Length: 377
Ligand SMILES: [Zn+2]
Image (cartoon, rainbow, N blue to C red; front, side, top):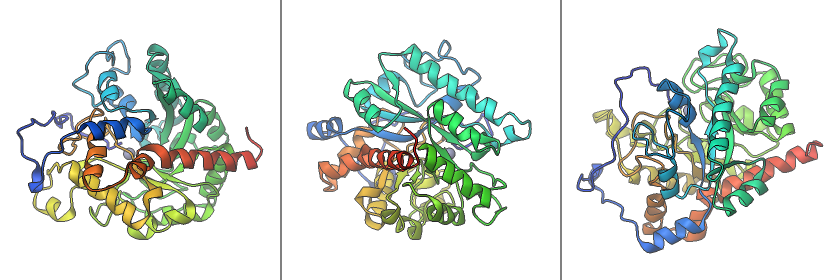
């Protein structure tokens, strides 16, 4: 989630077929083989901000935004989820950090959780809440979209370890330790450090998340916090929506030395599609509003594969949470084009299936095994 401070920023409209791609690259055209390989895999996206976007538009209600209808103001609706063949989704239940000032972070997080639960209840033929990896597999197998929740910003627990189990029980399966600002117990990538990465309490938060089986999400945190968290966690971690810093030098992206730590931890970096995080640094220097194209996102995917390995990459679009997206990745219908471009670049269907969802499924099972060792489930 990137907070959009001005309402003047509008969401990009789908690229016209004849619009040439930036950076002299060719339009990706889906083939029958691409479609088949995509459909044969389980696509499990790490981060979708539909709930916050609806709230931002002033109508956190599916009466106003009936997503069975086409919703041009959103990146997400049912028809486009179907076209994208989304099998499972982590729905973000983000609320801003300033909710902490009024002591309402947990309450407002619960309101966002309720909004997603309402969506699942309202469209029971489309969505179902998933409790664990086996559940995801079963639900996706019936053709529905398996739904899990992701907390974004550790202030949601209001400094109480007990709230981690409470939020788990409401369907939350990961928590991003910070958002854009540093907390007393965890430093953000985009703020001054407060605790040198992770405080003692921050370590306790991670141990409690391991105990209940909630994934530790290291998107948004500082590099020191990433490193400290990797030292503490027993379970594999995720980066639910982060790209590679070697290509786009933004503090929200993951540097190579952290990517290299992924095989030991077993974790996965789920590549963010936001233009600002994927357009190469050099190009952004000359044109900071460059959108980039699907090729830039696939470059990030290939970089993570190169440095961390094929078992440690995934997709975390950030749809409905960002104001600018690359050409040919305008909304949730476009995922099959990523599969196509990976095929075009010589990746095997088995590798593609790992990054679409196989890797994050392995991590969920890893976190479940750690929780089981602690006597939960
Ligand atoms: Zn975010």
